[in-house]
Amino acid sequence: MTLMKKKRALITGITGQDGSYLAEFLINKGYEVYGFMRRTSTDPFARIEHLHVSGALKLIYGNMRDLPTIERAIEESDPHEIYNLAAQSHVGVSFLCPDETWDINYMGVERLLTVAYKHNKKIRIYQASTSEMFGSTPPPQSEKTVFAPVSPYAEAKLKAHHLIEEYRAQGYFAASGILFNHESPRRGKHFVTRKLTHAFAKMKYGMQDHVTVGNLDAERDWGFAGDYVRAMWMMLQEKKADTYVIATGEAHSVRQLIETVGSVIGMPIHWEGKGLKEVGKDEHGTIRVSIDKKFYRPREVDALQGDASKAKRKLGWKPEVSFEELVEMMVQADLRLIGGTQEYVQQ
Ligand code: NAP
Ligand code: G4F
Image (cartoon, rainbow, N blue to C red; front, side):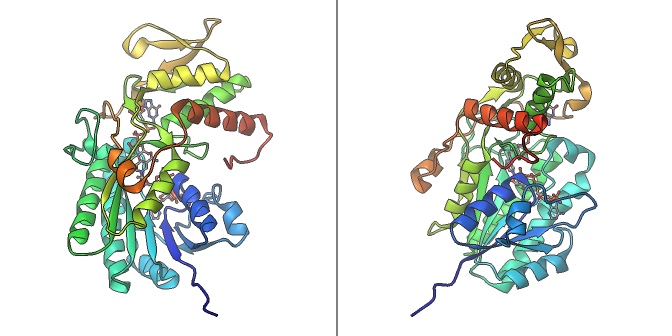
């Protein structure tokens, strides 16, 4: 009798939103999953504790800035597939910490590729590229759209994207997913969707008066993270590595997002005033949303709306959760969290 060997996957960025969903997805597919994570002073286990405690996920400490730790992780896990999700992923923060962003988001990828392909030329690698690389090139954006990055985050990601394509041209299996914004109840609270669902849940419970945001007119193509990690895996099962846009094809402004969150939670918002003085009020006239310049980016990406027809045609991928269902899912999860009926959101 021949025993089928389990496929092994190494996920960097395991403690993040996508890392946690992808780990669950691969474990369910029968993979042996290793997660690469930083040792930090705060509790980094929130999203993956259930996988780690059960022994389904093996963790390796390290840092994308630290070459020997990457070497050790690849040596220990000996992976068939690597999903490089680790990044300083906040666009606004990248203007404040450009060097760190560059070192993790570009140099880290260079370190990883060098070490991985030295270990085994056949490893299949997924790189987390981003729609931010398009900058303000008008929508819809596809694999053929011109890149025009406007932030240190996007510049580093674009350089990494080009590096992946160089390796691919040399015959390595290096795939790149240009993913548009994807969210979930596990999204960090410093991103606008979760910031809003969390704040509105607190307002609903009387624990917060109002929320302060930045640019209301920016448009994003928001999908569900669970749908997007499936696309990452699909890309690595193809015969040849390639680049794919992953998106819903539907865009909404931050203003529309706020209106949707308000209506789902039963606190409909209407707008008064203009510019920095604009406010969102509830039906009793109480200010629930105001604007603060500090949440504006030095350079903004105005409108992202992806054309994922290549992924649909070649991978057979399509999103299953709509914008309205996503907002509903996030609002309900935050209501349970704030209401104390759940310790941590595991949607
Ligand atoms: P996230 O929740 O912010 O997770 C980022 C992960 O990277 C965390 O696990 C973080 O670890 C880890 N990390 C940061 N610096 C590191 C370092 N020096 N060494 C090792 N690990 C490090 O981001 P996400 O939303 O899951 O996104 C996953 C990837 O997709 C990122 O590369 C992001 O840029 C990209 N992306 C995301 C979206 C989106 O809408 N979510 C869209 C396009 C592309 P700590 O817990 O220690 O901070
Ligand atoms: O939620 P955000 O911070 O996400 P952003 O900048 O689009 O980046 C996310 O998606 C990228 C893919 O396109 C990823 F590559 C990246 O890693 C990250 O996951 O901001 C969304 C929009 C922006 O236009 C921002 O200016 O919302 C606007 N915004 C308005 N008020 C705000 C706020 N953003 C944040 N974070 N906080 C605010 O108060």
